[in-house]
Image (cartoon, rainbow, N blue to C red; front, side, top):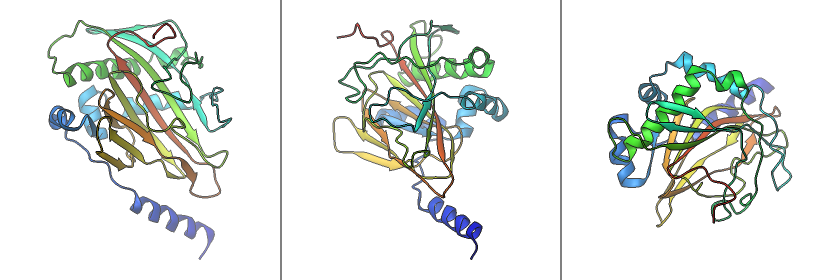
Length: 267
């Protein structure tokens, strides 16, 4: 059997062994959130929820074309690339926040908490994309609906957006080097954008106040893990290369918080 054939067999075997996510139909999401604090939406449900066509979502792939390295990894790793942007959504408007540090308290991030981490901002052209802005605004509306609010919500949502690439350039890529965690916000959106040439990257979600948990692997581009950060903790297992080539996993993580953006002035 040739090398190409071996690689194909390995890929098929790895795909077959991945645990499928528990996809929730969009109309059932409120009940699922009430029961377990998280839900997984298919790409089709994401398109329905946001009003964005597949081609519009794929326009956003440009955000992953030029991600600088994360210089703040305490383990010295070179496996993570990212950018960062902040916004305030109020009603039907999305307002840009001047570029700022990303900060989390130690209580939520024992590895990198307590640091003002300055990441490179989005390119201006990417931040101005209508599909990007609509996606964020629709996530704010989803957060409001997830809390039982209907109609226009005039209370602001404070948003941080993080396009990530985790690669196996150094052998192992760690999506969550801090381990299972909460983000210190109200809602967390994790979009799987792509996964290429990797094994691992299993998502694990646990009840923050009990023994319940579930594990699965997001595989569909633009599928969404939607988390109530007050009720669950989450992590993603390390990535390993599937072949001798460098693999990667691209995600978009968006956090939404009611009472302001987190910063170093917080207790």
